Image 1 (cartoon, each protein chain N blue to C red):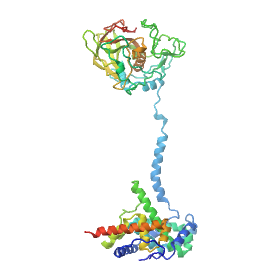
Image 2: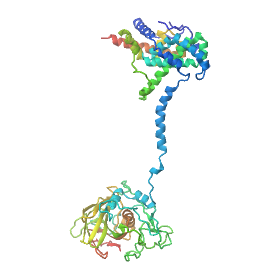
Image 3: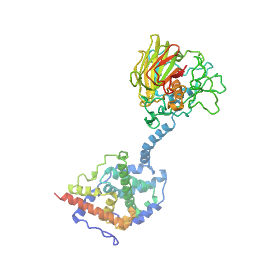
Amino acid sequence: MTGANDRRVGALSPELLQALREADAWLADRRPACALEQRILAAPVATRGAPLLRFALLAVPAAVLAFLAFTRSPSEVVPLSGSEANRVLQLPTRAGKAIRRSAPGTADGSPPDGSAVPPEPDGSQLELELEPELELELPDPTPSSVSEPTPTPAAEPTPAASGEPAKVYLAPVHLPGQETASPTAWSTTGRSGPTATGGRAASNGAPTTAHAERPGSGPRPPPVPRAPRDEVDPHDEVELHVFGIYTAYNEATGEEGETAVHISRPGRHIIVLAAYSGTRWTVTADEDVEVVHVLAVGYEPQSIAAAPADASRETLDAVAGDYLGCGYQYPHASESGCDTAALLARLELLLDTSVASFHGCVVASMFTLAEDFAVTSDCWDEDGYTLTGFP
Amino acid sequence: MRLPIDLPIAMSAATVAAAPRVGRRTDADQPLRAAVADAYRQHHGLVYHLALRYGRGRVAFAEDVTQEVFVQLLRHVGVLAARDELGGWLYVVATRRCLSKLRNERLLDVLSLGWLRRDDEPAHDGQAMYGAREELRRTFDALSRLPAKERIAFSMYHLDGRPQDEICAVLGHSKGYVSKLIQRATDALARHVGREVEP
């Protein structure tokens, strides 16, 4: 049964071997179907169809998927103008929605028709370019002025350290027809010069914003007021007023964390309330004043306790992931820890309108905006901190 | 039962590699096809039997192997010329084809692609044993549970009476490894039958 040179293997029981042979004999008596012979003889010599079919089952779908993945139609990409692209990149989504809701002329809440950036008189678009050179600064501990109740921001978590979205870009604005040697005018600069709405009080001379010293840019030209447009931009009818504090404290009552703002200037207004510390804002207005939108921004959580009935409300803070910055001094002092200029620039980009007024104080619990832009406040005016702003 | 093979398998395996091949079907193929038809009538029992044995009694598996083996014969006219070697050549080719298909099945099962296998009918193991005595069915089932190489080596050694040298030539392994395969299969069958005998 086996070869002479076979290696020894264990013996199998005769009964088992016999059963196996009988089973094998049973199989040997089986015969294939008669059609099998015809199938063999009728088939071409190279019958490779089945493996090819099986391969095609995998290869064809894979090829189709690969084709679809690598040949996406460029028409699926919606082209954006430069300013739109910048806005999409920069602006928090929630803020963008809020502004659209508050846009005048859209009583039903739908976004205003047409481009977000209306065309300039010469037909060109307001062109925005992003320059990622702005670095957010955290509020410094109030250097020497306020001892109580000003908190110590040095102990606060910094946006960068806490992983907050600190990538906010400052956008220089190219204004066609601008009367300046440089085609670029920083939208956040030039606050010290006279403007169309009147002169601004600069307490310590030239602006000291982080971006004031662009190499080769020289002294900044005064901001150019927007030229009249063919189509009236609803945003032009709205004034943007910004009130900034570091923290809210009422020296008379000792209450913390609440600040009230009252608007007496007639017209339509967007009110922006900026604070580093968490603040509960209350906004009121005279009867002939229309506040269309109230936006509270800050590092710590902000809230709007009350606002005029028709005003939409929005809060942006680092906790919610939308940190626009803070500012309570104008011109901005580098040791303040907040960058007022950057904040105003971002607000202008966000709201698509120029800042009509800014007033800030390190500690305050009340602001009142009069018809002539005059602001009264219980600003903590000791240790060199005073109410500053423009116009 | 001994298989009707009396030719040295090693020589037939060498013939497989040296045999000339023919191209696609033409009128000139008719004599070739007639020769293959004769070979089929003479040896299809051998090939089908081997395929049933190694394919766990599956009819579809056995028919696939039989078809593939004789289609391969169409491409090796030199084997037909050496009619004395034809039985050994078919034995080697059928055994290797069974081993190859069993490997592919195992790979597809591992990759969970078993549904891609082209089976014309459900793959009932031991289908060809329907009608046999229960004892034979259990014994064949024990043989079918062995790994493919062990099953083939054991069957060639114990059922076909092939020397280990020829088994080495078919499987492409050393004699030591082949003897180990046979021993493993023997032990596994003994254990399996022992378990079934115990109450």
